[in-house]
Length: 223
Image (tube, rainbow, N blue to C red; front, side, top):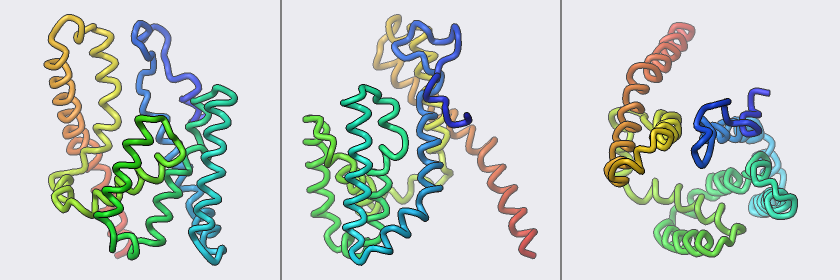
């Protein structure tokens, strides 16, 4: 029941005039992430039991993609298609990169360029089959190719706050019709600033305190 918010993401009378009535349309990804963590040992064990790990990856990828296509295009249920195991194509790609990490890093620049092109072409032409693996490679390889990205979290991890707060803020701005009343670019800029501000406040006032409390307890138990 906790993970069924994607079935009814709206609240009565709230954001009903918006294009999407969901209060926070991003939250559907939380259960997918948690499901990934639960199924990770099974996938890893499955990969390890096969002599060639890449064969296990192909099996998982094709089965996951088949689930996605069946529910999205044949049953016309795109919401179900984006649940587990429809998103295992992305997670399986991460496991594959981990297993062949040293070999992949030797050709990271070439692979980054190739996968960027494939991702772009796949997205433009709605060719879904190659998009998860190519985009997964782009994300991981970018992190290991552009060293400047390593300083992104120097002052704190604001990513979760951005993830949590951006959607409700967008919905609020749309509900107040601020994009229609004022310059849309200015409103978009203010929206980005507010999202970042809320994320920073969330990190220092809530997240960091809970993480520090947990770390202190772990150290106390260890001693």
